Amino acid sequence: MVRVGIVGASGRMGRTLIEACVQHPEITLTAAVEHPQHELLGKDVGQLAGLAPLQVKLTSDLKQITDEIDCLIDFTRPDLTLENAKICAAAGVGLVAGTTGLTPAQSGALAQQAKNIPIMWAPNMSVGVNLLKKLVAQTAAVLGEDFDVEIIEAHHRYKVDAPSGTALALGQAAAEALGRDLSEDAVYGREGQTGERDPNTIGFATIRGGDVVGDHTVLFAGLGERIELTHKASSRMTFAKGAVRAAVWIADRKPGFYGIDDVLGLNT
Picture 1 (cartoon, rainbow, N blue to C red):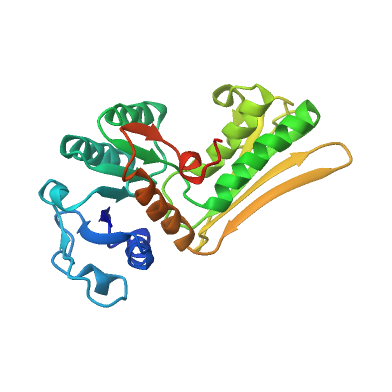
Picture 2: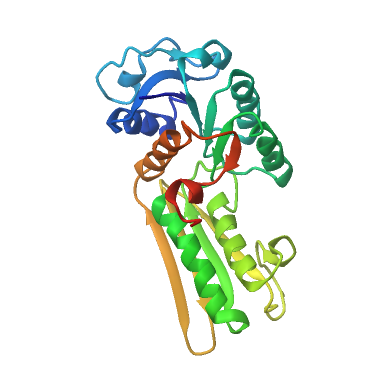
């Protein structure tokens, strides 16, 4: 059994991760962490998730529980994820991170910690989304320069970064297939007299509202025809199941910086 700890365990994603861990036959949830001022510290995390008691109390100090876990699952914020990665690296604990909004520098800093432990980082843990990324690359390669690429994403009102990490990953997949540099060709918003569309650009449109879990569409628009590749998530359990699958996968891996494609076998 893989002993798993969860950071941010009382949040929406954290509670779903608790449930996913309980459902997985190869995982034992042994620790859960929240910030030091959290009002639910000391509560049984099973009850937080609406489950039977798990005899695991919500605590505030990751350093104090690293000897109780084999892998930490982290869906928090970039700064916290990097700090937690340092703690895991010092303790020899594997890390599965689903945190979005990391800058290239932060992603590089996370990869540095993977010299000491296995780290799997992905902006989206969904099997369907990662299959979509492959399909986007294949479609872009076949259609080439004759089709404009636009990416539309929608998330709940509480999401703090935009565009989503998943949208950026989809854009990167299309850009690489077309031989482009996304950092130079991305357009993140249009307003006013923008002029004609530059055919080399990849556009992003962001929607925020309500309780949308996550919708992503990649539009390939040509003259006379369009292709739309869409994934819609209706439950956070989609991402939670991918994360616990990754936790089992990295349990016996050597130190290294892995992606969800490695877990799903999509790199072969």
